[in-house]
Image 1 (cartoon, rainbow, N blue to C red):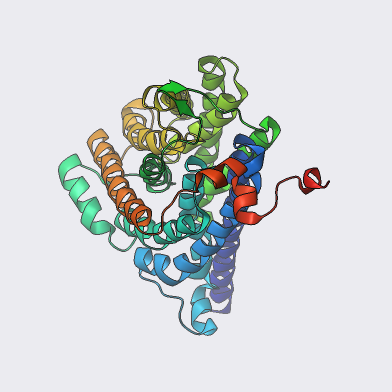
Image 2 (cartoon, one colour):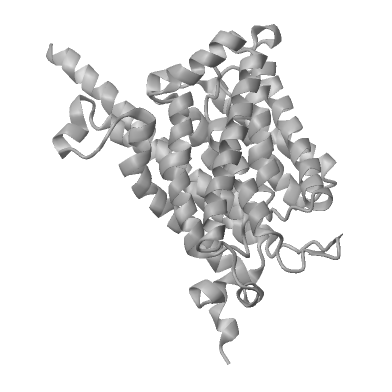
Length: 406
């Protein structure tokens, strides 16, 4: 009996360690979000990018602990520590830490779209609503305590449940499609479009942008692989598929983007976003294809968004996370079946329905929340504040303080 107890305790401990290491890797990705934004915005908005990401992370931690995780999984942590530890060394609360890192991606994604002209506190409020209510509600319908309702519907119509192993749709698509209403309601930055003509605003720091991409790419292996949740469920195919999709995205962006470093480094992220949903069921060659297609979608989608639709989405988060996240959900249905060497258990129709449901859910929530904030407290800086930059207007200091010493 003692031996069995010891083995059970060891298994519980390794699962807790497994999740904790994954959580730390995904937590580190938020530094990637920060540097990607800092490298893309102008110097006068770099401090704001850093502070936004860290503040949104901190607020998300609190609201997801108190409200979001209980909504998603029906587990509350308002109980004594002895009960929090339980018989499994605190697996549930470690699981909260891991999934918090996913929830906090939502405001981090949105941050890149609304950069350089959004007010600080209204966005903190919006991020809190999304991490505490909006995202957990959809999470509960796909992964959590209420999944039998929506998943049952998908299965009855499409023949299988909606499959999203690591969040192409639940995390990235939701984040990208939530960002679109914010960007539209905010309007373009001053000088971005003049008399109907596009005037692209140069990015400030390619090394910072590249650093952000690398940090995100490395952390992504925690995002995808550790989504297994338990050490005995880990899958090497998830790691290799993530790798293949990433390099597929890089190489396709290199060609489609004509050697542009911004597209190349975002191409890596495009591939990783797209493969999340089917990373556990695809053959590596089709993971490569999934990533390559995603990268082409981003290169041309970014151009259409910026130049044809004239939507000033600074980091292109709508095509990168929203559209490509949706593509990832659909790609799992295209390439995850046994006919193409996958594990099966998915159908194209269920994947399409699940992906479309996320778009509708996110757009409705985004327009409602940002519409309310816009009509009440306002969400955009004044022209003078925007001209001076968010760093000085909001934080009273620039990224390079010694430059202001006279």
